[in-house]
Amino acid sequence: MLSVSECAQILGVSTARVRQLIASGSLEATKVGRSWVLPEAAVYDRLLKNPSSGRPSSSSDDLHSERMASSAESRCDLPRLFEECKKAFSFCVPLDVLQSAKTQEEADFYIELSDFFLRQKQRELVKRGAF
Image (cartoon, rainbow, N blue to C red; front, side):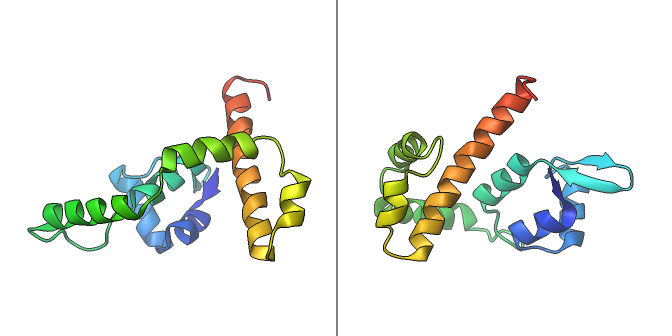
């Protein structure tokens, strides 16, 4: 669960904007006392949808289609990449991978991947009532 300010930081918007999104129903949230808390999954889902700011132009659908087509050409097979990362980093970062990292940034990336998949497993266990 994330606070409104944490959510704003992740989405790159103001806390007032997050409250507007909650009020409009665009972001799932729960009131706890006087504060709102947001499921991390809902925040990252919104981030992945990458809504553009401002009002849409009349030709925004055509422009969006062109952008998607050109970015799809430059992308690798992301579903396959996801599955490979899931297999490689589902429990912990293999030590040989960390040792072979060329930069600290690369090592941090591997640690973040492993952490992501660990959080997914934790959510799954919580949903099943294991905690």
